[in-house]
Amino acid sequence: MKLWWLALLLTVCACSKKEPAPIERTEPWLANPPDATTALRAKFVVTDRCEANLLLKAKEGSLRGVARVCRGELDLNLSDLSDSRGTLSVDVASIEMRGDGDAGRGEEQTREAQNWLDVGASRPEAERERLRWATFTITGITNTSHPNANAGRRERVEPEAEEPPSLPDDDADGAAPNPRERRSVTMTARGHLVLHKVRVDVEVPIRATFHYRGRATDDSTPNKVQITTRRPFLVSLAAHDIKPRDAAGVFQAQGMKLMGTTVGADARVSLSASAVLQQP
Image (cartoon, rainbow, N blue to C red; front, side, top):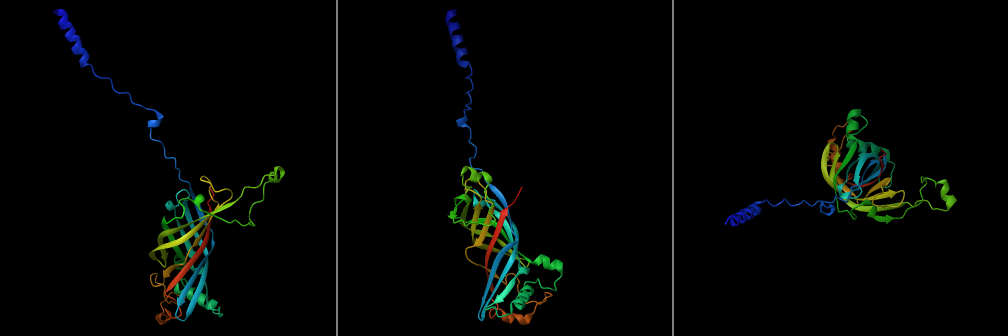
């Protein structure tokens, strides 16, 4: 009888023992793998020489002009171009105008254009400096033909005068110098244009051409980017309060009769600018 109770007691104790905690598996394949995609970002500085062409069509003819001074910075994600930002400014005080046929009124038309833009010769220098820059701030990139820079369309590369000479040992061992490549990507740059203290949202279709010193690969950075508009974009004179003024910035009401007849109400702008890789 005692043996029966002893056996029962041992059985109850055995059943009441706690199950050991499961072993946590820490094999490498169970861990979350790191993101294999690393953003390749680079900053570029816009060179001061550019070409911003303006065309103002009116009933009695067209006015044309060009501004050739720029500045700005581009912060590009070369592995995901849609994640790129930047600014590009054009100096409207550097504008040079010409009418149809260049009838000898270029200098006069240039002065008139500067007056209308409120950067006339009699304006205070501080105010003139503040108003002379038309700045396009890029806040988003859409409609990219290729997601990253090095996958863009291959462009023909012509010999460049500034190309650095080959290293001496290139000829010694018969090895060819590293080939240069250019890749172009079309996209739409979205943002806002600030001109004459007025901000207007704009979308500009552009082509970005990336210049590489060697092969364009996933981990290579171009040394230069060329930005060109694929078609002109419109800038409304009225929206930016561009109107007849004299050299001191005083509104000239009688000049309003020129709007739409000899001066177009909108400027069609085409831009070509370059930016070089910012050195660390």
